[in-house]
Amino acid sequence: MIPNHYTVSTFDRTYVLLVICMYMIGLVMVASSSMPIAERLFDNPFHFVIRHMIYIGLSIFIAALSLQIPMAFWHKHSFKLLFLAMLLLLIVLLVGRTVNGSTRWIVLGPITIQAAEPAKLFLFCYLSAYMVRRRDEVMENVKGFIKPLVVFGVLASLLLLQPDLGTVIVMFVTTFGLLFLAGAKLWQFISVAGVGLTAIGALAYFSPYRWARVTSFLDPWKDPFGSGYQLTQSLMAYGRGELLGQGLGNSIQKLEYLPEAHTDFVMAVVAEEFGFVGIALILVLSMALVIKALLLGRTAINKEKYFEGFFAYSIAIWISFQAAVNVGASSGIVPTKGLTMPLISYGGSSMIIMTLAVVVLIRIDHEIRLQSIQATSSHGKNRSKKGAEK
Image (cartoon, rainbow, N blue to C red; front, side, top):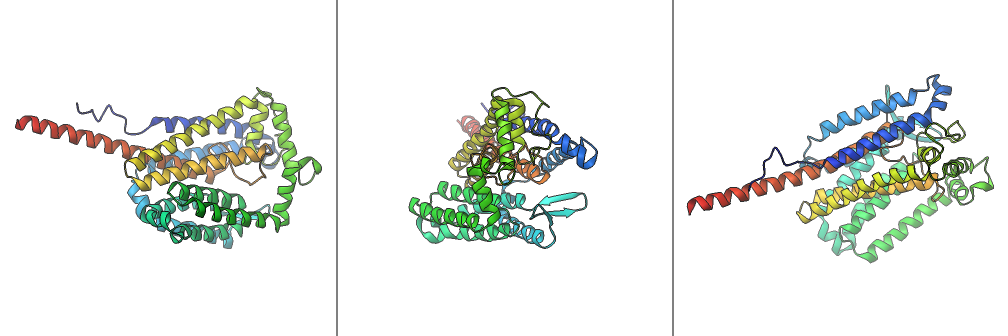
């Protein structure tokens, strides 16, 4: 029996449901956590809420357009996208806006672009295409393993000039995870990973600012009104939340005690207002998205759609690691890195690029389903033709 093309779903609607749930949770939490600071800075408690709604609308608009782009386009133009990522990182160093000692934003009228966000997606697109072209070389010799690390090194150098060590670490982990899944030899993986971790440690040690953040993370109560201030306030929020939280709007830490409450530390406000249950819900939603991306990657690889498979794997690693670092930083498990919670935190560039990453997953799923429908239809027609001949 040939399936009806109008009754068979050509994409997985679970992705849309997960993203909408995270959008709504993020909107509520940005509204709750940003009102005190918005009232003081702009005399409008809804300033950040309105902008966040605009970002969500813009993300959906860009998603609708991007959904029409076939994966073949991403594959074909992967090098051009990498070049665009490098260009954006160069532009931000030349004419970018500096905030809190970091130059990370390109200002285009009312719009600000954080260049590091598209750089992540475009790097992973390029690496996925590279794995298709040079997979045997990656698995068989060091040269194929080192080449993508050189590309990563160039982007990392530009990011460290901003400085943005958090994005470098996300790229580092995702790049190595992708190389490992592509079949790189374990000894190469361990040796180069060791060198990379040593280099990151050295970057932290020889930078007084970064080293202060590392040491304050180890013992934030040693200097609770200095280097450990942000983390101690965040830990207080987690402590007050307990199991079920204090209730929506009842956070004390958001009353300008906790810096960056609506961006990097929005999960601390979630913990205070909704407790362990609230944090667990968001982590379950993120984990569901990551698991679906990993399963999609495996399905694509099994169907010999290697670029699509590696791209889905890289998006899964990226989302899972960034979410883990964000929650870990606000709960004192890892040093603070200035990374947003995917699809939850306030931030236009992060919201748009994360949505675009999910759109890529939906497009991959759509093309695989379409291929299966066409194959089934073709098989049914051939059987009908053979039956008629008999």
